[in-house]
Length: 380
Image 1 (tube, rainbow, N blue to C red):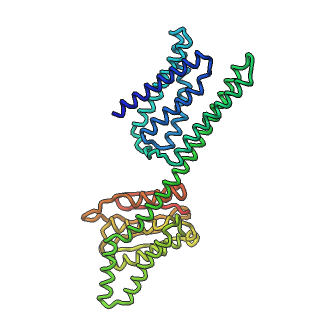
Image 2 (cartoon, rainbow, N blue to C red):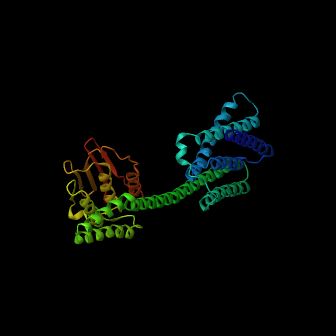
Image 3 (cartoon, one colour):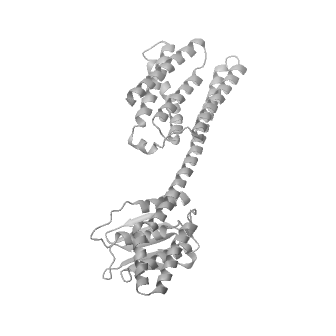
């Protein structure tokens, strides 16, 4: 079982820490460098085994060194009260500190919040940079300690060695935080790009799904059958305009509100042929807001959601209001429950939220009540 393997790993590193600490003290060598390397190695192995994200791994490396530093002194202070041998106190406190760090990290990786951190550590360039950064930090600390120990003599050597180790530890923390920040930016960029791709794919899929094509072709067939050739031609041009807009903006992260309104009007015009008396779309956008930007297809998607999840009839029309106040684009509709409700997956709103987070860091607002449903999109 995995827990038994982790137990062997933690116990093994604890014994290795103990042996290293005792051996270094016996031969008169500072063991801080070696213990730091062993602690970082244990942290990396556990995080790698649990397939945790690079962000969590980098933060863990920082935290185990901070916690280990304090815990080591705490255990040593307690042991000195019952054990008189300095060497034994140092060795046992090192062993207990490693055991504590290992088990805390083990259970932290199994906590509920850790499920969202399992992005998988891969042997890619980012992971190699993380390893290279840790190694570089260790090398810098070794060089500083060697310089201070060789250059400094006399009674002040111990004091200056402590200063050198403290400087090295500060460099270690700063570099690890920098690595964590760089890795987080890279991963965020990759996730944002993936979210954008999924949003674009979903938007396109919403338009080419069989129901939309089936309804569109039925309407077109009816127009042709009734000899309404001029209306049929207009319908075809608007249908083509929908696809042209989507293909033209499939790589754009934001589009002018004026363009999105034109696209949405083409879409609602097609819907009006299916619901000539049951659907009303009111647009109230000030002229000064038209040059502002929104996520592509977001407005159309909200109109489609309104028609998808509500009953539409001449006696109880669905009214969609589109307005703006200079800061937010508001899309609101009355709620008319269907006899057979369409099960909502929430994908549309989730993708809109992800798109706005990716391009602006702002949040889309959703307000639902018994009678109305409103979504507010930030104007960019």
